[in-house]
Length: 246
Length: 201
Ligand SMILES: [Fe+3]
Image (cartoon, rainbow over all chains, first blue to last red; front, side, top):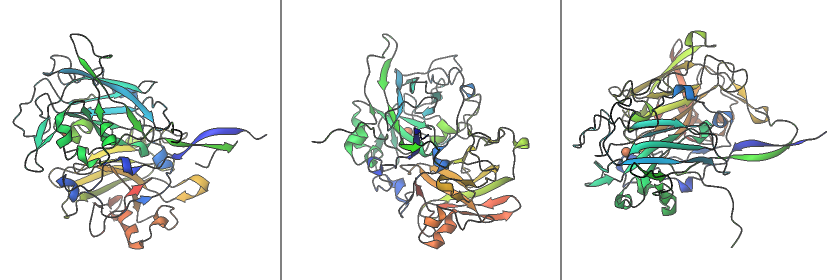
């Protein structure tokens, strides 16, 4: 008897046109850090279609609360309190549950708690600047944090980063690995930022700008911003009652 | 107008920036103790019980000027010594297959301590030579770079990916050189002479 089974095949090839260009003279560091030669393109293999998994047991109760996690709950961070929330989906529109999301950001004054950040803005003794969580069965996640400050950086003579939160996501396979940044609706610095401008299609950059979301804002407490993330999907293949060789 | 596709597009990448370590390797960034358990500090759950040969791979990530970058962060993913990917049935329970490591802020050198991977059969029964997958991010890298480490003391002749490299001398950029028992050297060059083969798969 022949039975048709729907299974996941290789990863859908990455559409590099939506991504930033690797080489961009306006982002000076990229000039010597972008490959000159073409990438070698191939169909994904098991090493891209599998990936590490992380259990909830690795995470602490305050890991997704950046207002409290640096002081282990002893004192809140300074700044405008915000909820960052959204869903992780794949290109087929399916939720990606149980995947690790990590974020890091500057404090409300625009200073990172990193040994190499020497900006004038003071460190907030109550703010560490990183958090992590695992998506639920619907692919949803949330972080409580403070709005990061914009900050100047050495590039062209007077470049500033818009307010942003760095985001790292795993998905379920190593080929889905992604790092990106969330920007905030209405920030005038987005249009002047050479890192944002490495994405040449403006409609793609707009996908990194989180809208203000009053539906999730809590009165007299925090504002909310929504940021959905889409990871690469896998081709669905129909085949007859045997597994494609893996 | 044609019908609309109901598929979504991947979220665009952005550079990991100069402070990526605060998010992914807090201890390296000077914030030790931030999390009770940091992720990916070693690919071992139980090194003394892991099957296979334990190896160390040392190298640097060089920019186009030949400078060993001090701020590169790398992740690795691999199968176990028997060629089984962690998470699959029969995989070595002492091994996670995943590690995060960074170039040293002084020397610019990284070291990955792991097990030597086995070979496995992929689609169509084609056997791959043993390799470790890498993903490199840093300030100035706008989308993470994928590459692989193969080993000079293995038979790499029939590996399906290495066979696809037209300019045969470039195959060497993916092969770790043995320096002594269990120790290898693997450098990554983002540009210029001997630019590493980076992958899109
Ligand atoms: Fe930043």
